[in-house]
Length: 267
Length: 107
Image (cartoon, rainbow over all chains, first blue to last red; front, top):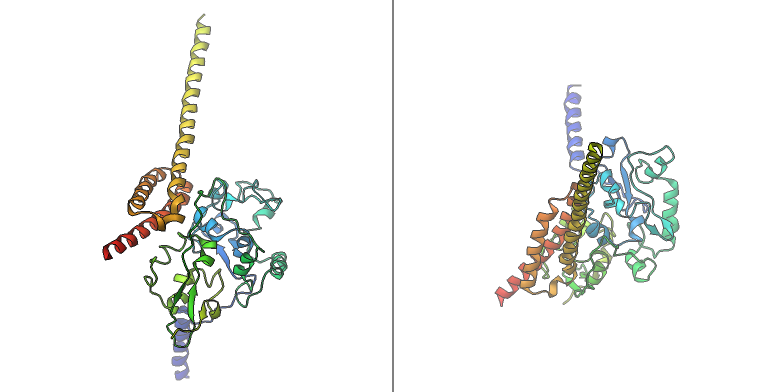
């Protein structure tokens, strides 16, 4: 009995430490959950459920750059600190969700209001929600059926979908975006794999700039313009740094090794 | 007569206040337009940053610094959006500028 009294607390402490260090295996998100972000800076304080933002809904219509550069959304959940007042003034979500902007011949619903009726609350609940709706899940599967398949993440090959013209992400919004000259795309380059036998990475600027432009990656994520300036390892990438800023949460996950490691090792 | 004079005086006052508020609102509107146009012009070159010369990049960074001071005077939401946007393009210009300067040194 004494031994038991000694062993049980030690076991509990050990489990606690393992839990605190993230020792538990993360639940793999389902395809329609992949890229979902919960935004809860001020919602609950205001008596509303947090916002559940689905990237797949938005990236079929808009580039990453448009929202993360021109509209000003941060790259990590909660970093933008959006208030409903910001949306009502026509910024952040309110840039498009203003009840006036039209997309696919449909008015985009208005985000946030000072006062709302019971009926109007249904609009609030499109974003402020605790649970996923079966209708949205259905919508995802209907959409993904028309897109080229992929093994991981959303199970949608977004790059191919864009290349084939199945989606045409908008990169410019009148009165929001600055008019820019066409981007001169830098050449693709190879990054030598550190593990023997692992194919090298062919990094395509073209594929990335279509979605991101320049300033989304440089210098905040990658500090060098010259090849080899940013030194990073797979451990850091898995820790959501460098490529891992997007590839894991929204863009295809890193478990899909073959998407990046494409070239057989040279000489 | 006094009554008419009083009304005229009040009308004058209303007219002056109206003119003043119109002047202020126009100034605010055009003021915002002015910095917004400058913002667009400054950040529009980010796609072209790699082909700009060192003096051109330096000039853009200076423009961004001036703009930053103007935007800092705006309300919280505008500051949140535009200071972030400005930071992104300014950082890109500085980053290209530094790498070009380094390249020149190495030559």
